[in-house]
Length: 212
Image (cartoon, rainbow, N blue to C red; front, side, top):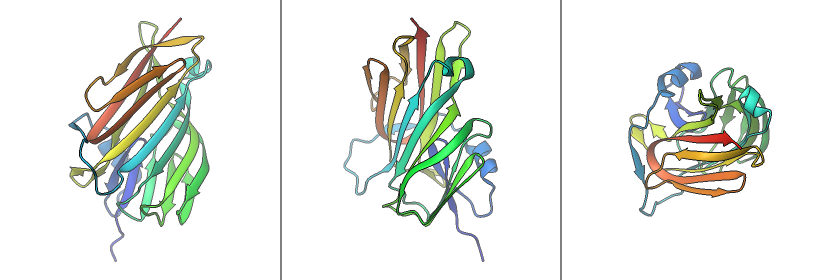
């Protein structure tokens, strides 16, 4: 009997893993997805899109190590009843499930989280540390998040992203946020940058910080 397809959330995006495929193989094949196309959604949708909320917290220790605190939530799953959230090996640690609802089974295995019996009413939140901060040659810092996407076979489906980046404002200030284009809303307050978008396609986010 054929094994059913498994949806795979690759750090930020969601794709569907073919029956029998290894998660790391899918990660290697799909994590290279560039900003192939980005289409903001202005129309009314029949159902809520796949939702990804993410809060990244930079500390003083992050500036030396590159490790950032990550709080991540997902809801409105609708592709398959089985899901696997996959991060690049060696780039995530200390995964802890903080909240879930309407999920049959959850297990953490290395750099992955396995979910069974999920549906459109399911939700999941977890904490972790991820290595996404890099020091540039000019002494500034860059946070990279993405690619965000919701992909099934060869098509992209609606997705909503709510990303917050928190940082010590006594040490750092934001110099630039990419992308700067229609359909991506960016708001800045002291110590926080928030980016929101509802779209089809793929989205990379880069936040550049500099010391005070």
